[in-house]
Length: 449
View 1 (cartoon, rainbow, N blue to C red):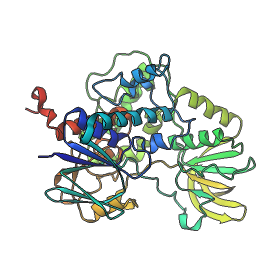
View 2: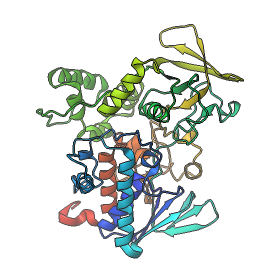
View 3: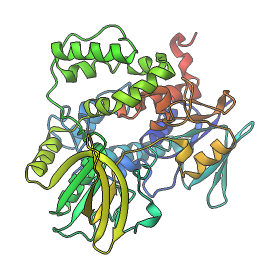
View 4: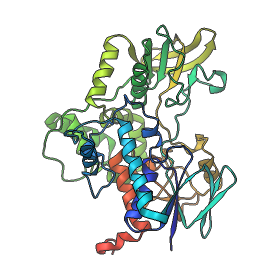
């Protein structure tokens, strides 16, 4: 019988997991967070006021059973017609923080928030969570909700050989924009959503120098357009990559590419679950970069600001592969090879920002908790090395292939099992489902019978 659940991480996923346990009248919960602001996580806690949500507010409710919750919250604060708007991420962070505060108030002794850094979880007939300060917490089950793992260093870069003033491994760090002059050049390695955030933050903080964004293909996220109605698919498309591309192109010609991508949302997790490891590998090698820039889009205002920076010459997007980084007195000499060319080039920049985006390869993580669990075989990487291997219930899978009854994982770290598990609509559903199971609420109404 599970009476007490410990949740590691109080970002979006961990916070919702705790709140949903209370909403389902489930086990007591302890939410353990190592940062000073539980309820926000990196996505909303480290956001700059210039950063907007990439999803319309009408799709950002924290609760799948109450899709209008966030819109009503905005309306109560005087936001006019918020459903179709792209609000600031700092505002969404306030929303989550208030949800957690209300849950702690209304839940009395059923929800505890602890400041601490979990470095190991020992699973026996219970779970013991060991903290970095030597303390421990005992519960009946634990949920790992550590969010996205930090990006790996770009190819050719030895972080130990570069000064912290020149190389910013953490794009969300407070010093990313410090000490720059308008004559400087900043290179952001990566051209996805992280790069967009870095560019907007530098611009908002007054940097008027030049930004060079470099990635293998030089692809930028596409822009949202006003939604239009269309006749959607009523059955799951094929999972073979070549057939999927063909069908997607056909649908895009008929209904527009945005609609063609969006109508896959109800099927995407099932498509991924039914695809073979070989098909998943082909998708990741050949299609993922194109999928990412079409699936994860920019708010129109953000796209407009980015276009203005490119038109003025302050932002240059290039395609190529980094080869070497050598620090000098006047900056870092970056050697890179442009895509489609054989001869390398060298570009002098005054700062490097790692904008390659979050990673999930457990074999390369420095996270003490994950390293400890992998080292003992309590968890294992998924086949595609996107994160922690879990079963359809979000139960972690050990090195011997057995699924745990006491250790679970949620959020982007479970991407290998679910693929589409990085956006709010997907994560809130996962948290809801796991909370119902841990609360035995999944039997209500005959479900599971």
